[in-house]
Image (cartoon, rainbow, N blue to C red; front, side, top):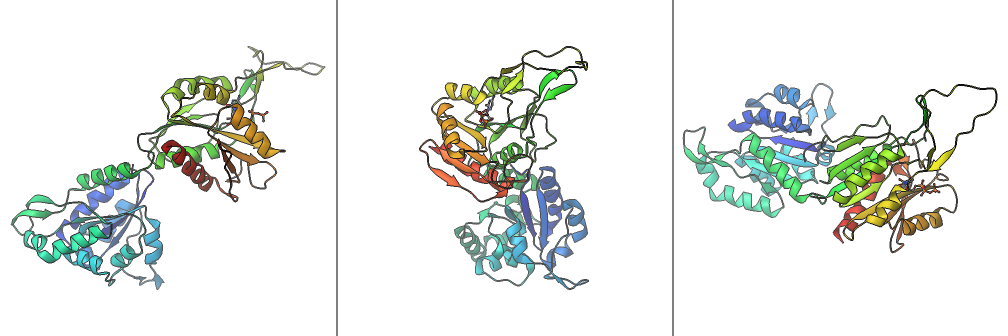
Length: 400
Ligand code: CTP
């Protein structure tokens, strides 16, 4: 669940700060991008150099970069994160967070953060048990912050008891579980197809199309980031998925896409059919390269199976089927015809008449039409944002 996530790690002045190095390492290994913000005192316990090396990002502890006089913008940092973890969270910083005090960059970033905030306290037993600490923890939880409880054991002071920061492995597992629990598509299996198909004429030639696969890959990434278990059937394309959790199956022809869809659709909760599948394929594939002759060449084509229509006929009541329609005229009517004929729950219409829409571009302009013929038209956006809009609708349909 941490793959591709942007994690802000706040480190406070506590002996447990030495564990931050392991925590950063584990987060990075999980595929997260990590940005560390330290309190000035924390830099006495572990060096910014260690944490910047491990996180592969600059570490911030001051409002200003003294060498250049530039400002470390706490608002920008706060908005960057998908999650913020404060570990170790000292009694002092928790008190400031509870009271809204902003006397260092970390507390300023905390106040600016819009993402979920997790805090893993670390302190001595008596400080931990003190009413004011417990009061501050209750206040922080009341603000919606998530406590990663400390463990029990020998403390740096020699005392035994509660107050030891959760181990880095426990923090990562806690975060993973919590994000998974809250992701809207956790437990949903979604099949996505992307890219063009190549229909062989002979061993060296094929009939293909201009699809880049960008839209389908953006959809697969977005669905995976929402917690879905994604199987991506990809035609020939140079695209790469952001998430290792996506199961990619490379295919070439319309027949290959059909075979994979027939295998995976029965197990899926939803299918987003974004691939530009060929409607026709050569009736006969020559075994040897076709040699040039003086007269023209005619290649006989036969129809491929309409995969979406086939899936629409098999679809069970709980399954959500999404198709695409790329049109050049009479756009909405053609899209509605496809939605109805193929028994779809949603159709994504893009018109080649809209500048910046369709194949190859990094942008797309779509209209979503559902079974009730509710229509939403979106502005021209980059394909990641378009994927987000489509996934919001898919998530709603899966909840019905
Ligand atoms: N599609 C499919 N199987 C095919 C061809 C297309 O499943 N053999 C799917 C595409 O993945 C897309 C949708 O059908 O989601 C619409 O594709 P499009 O080419 O716009 O429409 P067609 O139904 O092929 O009709 P036409 O080409 O006549 O517009």
